[in-house]
Length: 226
Image (cartoon, rainbow, N blue to C red; front, side, top):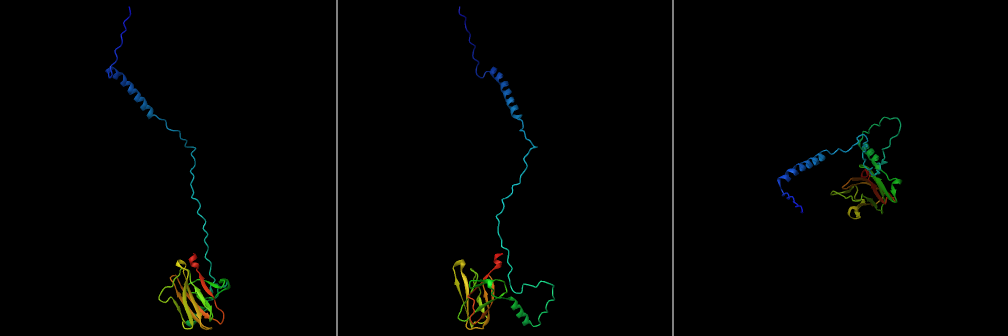
């Protein structure tokens, strides 16, 4: 006699028995995961062996060579070394004082100031620059490149009858240069010349000789180099 096999009836999906058995298991797993997430140990930090702070320095600036201003060898500036002597009394005649001031302000051409035939004067306000010329020869007075004449009468001379004075230009654009040309009609003449530009005023004394003349005169400008 063959025994009869009985198959257990399958548990229906969503039965109350399955829900009662799975709910506690789900809560247990959720609690375990929450406990693991909330108890992460902190990282080990060693405060005793911290690296010292180092200040980052900026790279050194490039070296810039600046030329110091050079003293101008003008007349009347050097004083004797020694005991201070009593100052000379001032002349009572004002014409004498004017002549003394003009004599102290005169700047004569020097050997070291020549570049070929051009005399290069150091420019100082109020100086009386000496220019020598001769009949039949033209002396070129060259201004700074880029400098222009201004005013209604930018070039004025005391004697415009016996001195021939004109002006011309060389170069173009910013390199344009003004040239004042002077020529005496005979020797042994003397007059003064004033030139007004957009940068400065030049004062000169023109002297004519028998044969000696200066081919060209120009200036260097120490104040522009500061």
